[in-house]
Image 1 (cartoon, rainbow, N blue to C red):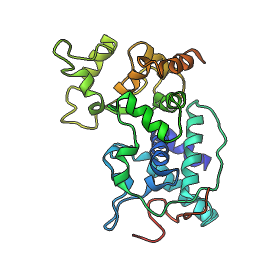
Image 2: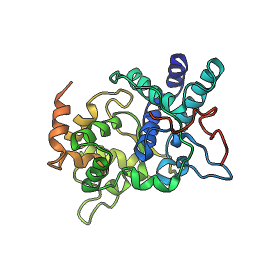
Image 3: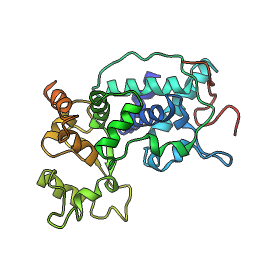
Image 4: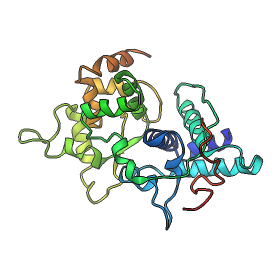
Length: 269
């Protein structure tokens, strides 16, 4: 498994961020049950095809498929896709400089994947702070834990459409959000000038160390380099700012399956 992860990350450096995002989107909707991995078919539209998930890089799904294939050859029907996703996300975070943490194994794979419940369960780039705090609280997370989880934006990228409102026609008095560093804002405006014609245009969430899992993301927020409005808001809201400041200064249950393929239910629905 380690060899597959390393080879994939080296050949496609977006894999770590993509896999971490898939893991978060999977867990936050209905628990860590790999329902996010299911591919849509003629009988079932899956979570993967919910609007908010359409921009997830395909490298994550490719990686899980490769790992699952290798494990099925060695020990068929034993290791669930949910466990593969959890361990892969952890190991890839470690590969790009993040912390190691224990992963409890024994998850089962869900037998359903419902795209209709996705949007209301996932935070968006424009979600107001009150709603963000409420959403994370509903999942059992405090404001401090939310700030820590959003720190995953230290790797990966966001599409221009997710922050275009901050850099084009922001207000009657300013073309861009004054919370941005002016030089950064102008750079984003040039980068995303044709984003409506090229929806895949994107920018790194962390402009300084985009491929390293570190606390630079929090430092960027302090100097107007937070890409998304929901991120930047964490340094202006008194409920979250103390936790951003702190990090800135730092250096199973049986109700499910073990899928044979991570992108399909064992019994097609």
